[in-house]
Image 1 (cartoon, rainbow, N blue to C red):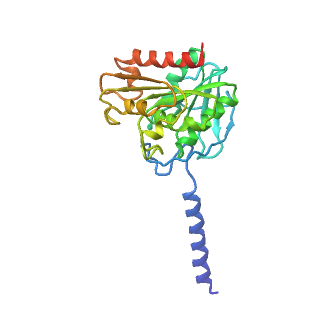
Image 2: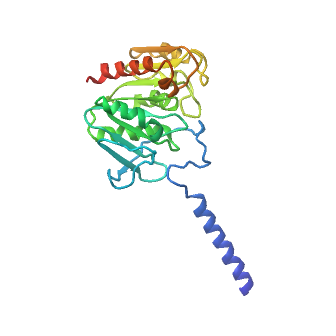
Length: 265
């Protein structure tokens, strides 16, 4: 083969190799496309995590200190979620953040729950939302929780409602703050959020800007396999904003009462 032709073949092969490496590499927690919006389909495959150990320097950089007993579990590959466990004991709570958040967004509320004696798991959203929450629940059980409530805010709320039936008997309840059906989250109908055979707490504002009017009430009506607690507060605040607004005390009190009833204290 002529030298010039050989050079072109070698350059072409190198370009293909570099392109392959570039397409298969993403930073930690980064989804292909980089979009934090509700845009990824869901499967229910579970993920695995490996412990980095508290104090190893590998902890979420949330801009605030993570105090008290905690353990950070780093995803083994970029498509498996990172989980932060806070506190200890048999009473577990999994908290899912909104679509634009993760561990750091849910941290303040998680620390509030930990101060009340709960063993809490928060996690980052990756490409498979059902698997992310499932991973957090499994990590919490492996760390000593015996009964858990799963829940969250907006995406965290609807994924918790949808995934809870597949998590086993250790899950004793679900709380949803501003949750509703979403095709891109993998749970497109009211019915898909009403299958859990146990108690659920549904909280939303009257004029929630994300889901249609009456969404929480329709989930409650469809949920016939367990008791419902439904709280509709005035206004148009959504998800975590409800905790910080004028209705915050009512919302927090409802979640506290729900957790206490199911997990004891």
